[in-house]
Length: 351
Ligand SMILES: [Zn+2]
Ligand SMILES: [Zn+2]
Image (cartoon, rainbow, N blue to C red; front, side, top):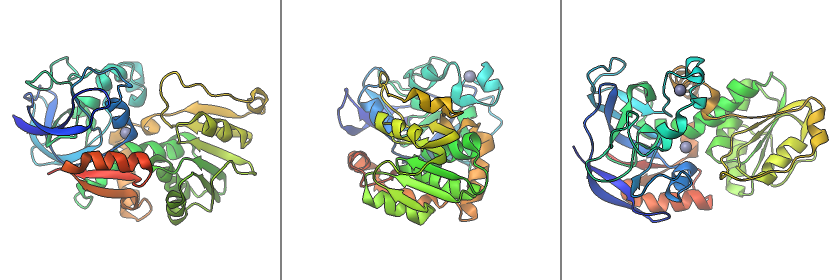
């Protein structure tokens, strides 16, 4: 099947729209006509060869659209269903069986192997893809039945795309990992889409004090609008019951542990390059403090996304406030605006 995809020819090269031929769906796969796709730091990391995927390659892992074809064994969705594509997993390992697919033992190969989950090449051309089993910077994507989630009729594709990764990650870290009791205090380091989703989730959880820390004034203003009770450009003076590191920086992690109250919990979701080291004050952890990491919201998308969609419908998770829209042909501008901080969550309108 002939498609248009944003191809990266070599490490660090710009995205270029080119024609490719997508493979037919395997028994448990679906072809999604991509209506919209979010742009995330992880796509930029892919472009810059953090994952060792052979170039040329198609990225994009926050796609939403309409199911156009289904494999022989697919039962979860039908042709014409509106879906968002989430992070994939093997569905068989112990983490997957425990309902924690974010920690799938085969995640690295399935997300960054460049090929479909069963090892087939995704395109007729010699091009890597199947990024997060979607490669949704394209008019059409091949996903597995397991990583598509049906959308409610009232949720537009271009808003749904933002849920796929960033919103799920930030909201899940708060609601599924930290689980703050009403009245507690939380500090969120990094007010990008993940951090701002965490701010909204902290308000949903009933936190009394929600502090957002970021260098960008525009993001701090948005954090206030979304529920932050205080904002700061550097490490706050007071202590917090919970902190979230959503900046992917060693300094932010250090600060997020330093400002924890005794028995406080810090959750790390920021994505740093492999090999990044952070320093910690050892005595700080001694007083009952916990530091843990979390990926993809710590819950199966199938169970957690419908909860998030319900919060969106109630107006408690106004994700559209994070989103700036771009035409597909403007993908390089969307990436640049994401890197500069001008856009919090760029979403490409594809078809
Ligand atoms: Zn697994
Ligand atoms: Zn992402």
